[in-house]
Image (cartoon, rainbow, N blue to C red):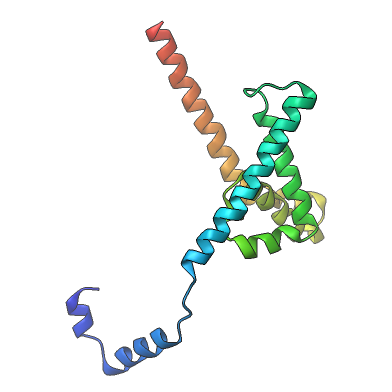
Length: 158
């Protein structure tokens, strides 16, 4: 904060800031980072196990296994959210549960569950992609731009 603003504070404002600092909860940042890392890593390990499952039992290759693995992880997140388990995982892990593709699945189903009382069309259907819609639009647009650039470089470079 600039020194001029600090000088202009009243005694009451300074006393309030001291009182606020005294009662402010200290966040265990290192502990939260470790929990997020472990849960995010567990999600990734499960995803890798699913990939190996598809490669071994369904003859996918390492290049083609990504889509079914992502879809399966989103489906698992949908189930866990529907049963109320994913919320507990999110409370424990914080960003560790939000960053992987499972966080995307959770965002979709959470909005649908929240608005189910308004009906399937106006409630679930219209609100399901409120949060996820922007992610989908950005993903599709980004894929288009990357494909366009790749095509142009392919045409120019041979």
